[in-house]
Image (cartoon, rainbow, N blue to C red; front, side, top):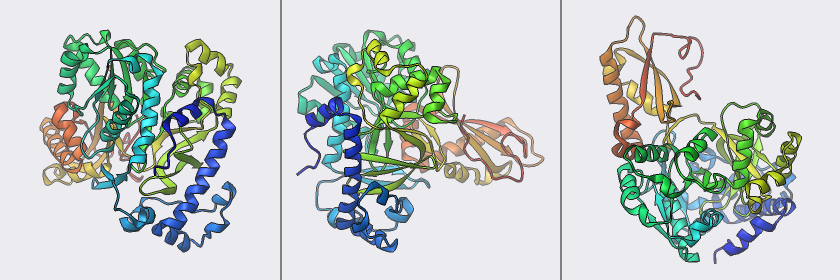
Length: 500
């Protein structure tokens, strides 16, 4: 039996249940998963024993604070796979996805049908925001990486389930990150549909829009909607979409998700959170009230306590959620925070915004859910992102140890994900020349060639993206004299990754 409950009940709960109910569900589900995992998962049973935790004494969330955290190193990599899963049983239908680890080596994560059904609820809810989607005909174009990677296949599986469970008149096509194929679809296939939904990484979607306009594809005649994941993006990006394409309501026709490799999409943007981010974007006091003194734009999302629950300690996020490998107080590696619906309303009210009035004015009153909220703005294990792909410092370090490059480079560098004036995303790599070495033009060609080679070797995701987008994915190299203080101040720890 699938322990998830009927999708229609959960969708109804989102609309009808108040904050107090979700707080009760949160406590119930955290403690329930903790006790089930401590009884049925050999690895976790051993982990608690080593930390001298008696599960029988953990009866409240206050008691739960005593439970030690787990992470990839002290738990997932410390125990064999067979001891990490429920009842040590892998004789069941499982889908396996892959992502690159911190060293570029693939890490594998398992999914069961109940996981896809949870994501189905999120996708179905998004479909239902816009009546045109479910009256159709609608075309869903999945432009995430397909194959072993979780985003593309996860969106495909969830969408397929939502469409067939509900008999929605939605057709799916999955070109992956192949921009040429996406453009062909928009040119030849999309005109047959009343609405088009594009699911993809934000930079790739922007490339598609820009190239479609350049090639004379009249995308404004489509009723477009967008599903994103992989990274945070700014409200300027959302406004860019609104300016370039036909979107009826930016609050219900775009959705970003906060996902993890371990549990997939753990929280999702809703019309409420998009409204709040737009308010925060133009009201600095609201921004500070919600997120504190941070510079980076966070992703603000809501989560369903039936599926996942968050804690936050010193701005670090921990989550507890069920999957083939259940995770209890798992160290996400992300920085951010959590908010209650009540706290959100109070912060808005203190700054002169009545949430109910604002929602009514914008036509989203029926989409105001009293679910808890989470925001994320930075990974602890810093890396740069490019089209939703993680670019780790280790990749560039490997390239710079090449003998040809070491003749003129120290192997120090700083990576920054940037955007040009047209909001095109690119990766800038600042490189330090050796002492007494001046820049020569051919250095750039040699270094770029080797860096791209290593990125393709180390990251299968980058390789596939590069095969499709060619030089657009290549980093921009900037060369600096030895010990130039902007990036290479002597005597301090090298900053391998910097936020723009």
